Image (tube, rainbow, N blue to C red; front, side, top):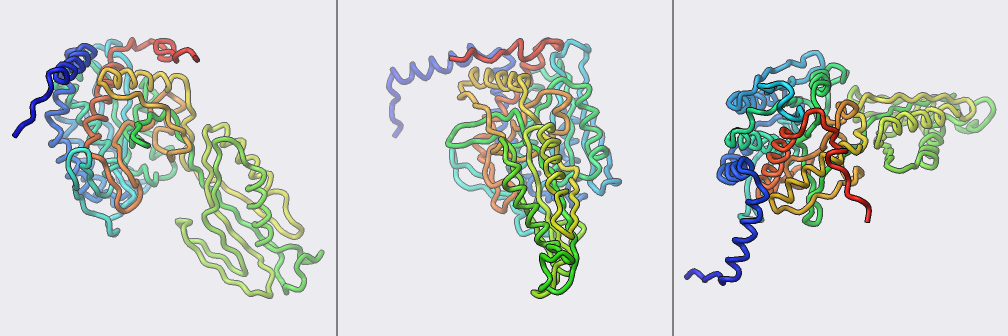
Length: 456
């Protein structure tokens, strides 16, 4: 038996619905309706993508995901091309362009960024897609559900909604999807060449990596810290341990590495900086595998170690901070203990995406969409709470939002999930964000047009 809803409650719900409708333009209402009506189709596409293993080094799997996305974008009128990346031993890059039919009259030129690979290779145990619960507990588990096939589906259905509302045609959008975000091919000048080129003829970047949610609150990201590896090698005189610390034998390589690591610990700390030691080896002999993730050492208790090795990473909030910290580390390494030597090298890694007022203006536009949809405002995420990403390669050229995709838990770990109940929520706000950016004067300064609220 159905319970009657009190008249006063019905009136209140109608008032809220009417108010929301008043805040949405006709095209925006059409977009929201499309997204709601196609929620199951969106989830079906997610399952299809997740069930294709696309670990970074499964090149055929990444290409298979790219083929499906190519078909989706073809139907939306994008000009799609696949750029092989054989020279860096990666699957390739998908580039799709939707040119403005009237150049200069399509608002801000948007660069949409994402990746088709996952951290889960085809020989791993975590491969299947499952769904549990209903309603607010509707959770999908599978490799890449959150990072970031859920975000790819959100991007596609936001674009489909814009097409259904008749507004996609009046946009200028370039999409660049890498096949190797989880372990980019080197040199980055090759593997990120097309992304950087696209950034140079775009105005804003939107990255469809995960939308974080903590304690029920969604957050917007305007910055991402870098991720740069370092490799430390030390040498020393060898001989009988009875001569350790002597003028002729000195301290040995292990003490030299220990000195350096402890100096890092005490001398480097500053805001937004972390530095980790991931591997240490030392002894009579040291061998490290080409990937730098495993190694072996031999030694004897009564022999002074002639060789030692350590590696780790640093994460910084800006490229200026990276340069400063690397210089400090090099200076520490150069202060050798007697009869030892040491050197440090830094990997290419991911640069930093420093926060800017233009990027914060983008977040304010997104929050305007949230308000119109009746969603809560998204505070700015502390960059210490997320890792590095592709958008950092283009951050020096244009402002951006660094995570407007799926919402889930456990990225990079077996059991990774996406909350399917949030997929339409994230899709709706992203569709409105892109539509509203297409209505902004192409030459307008975002931080002037959308200024921060005065401090209270």
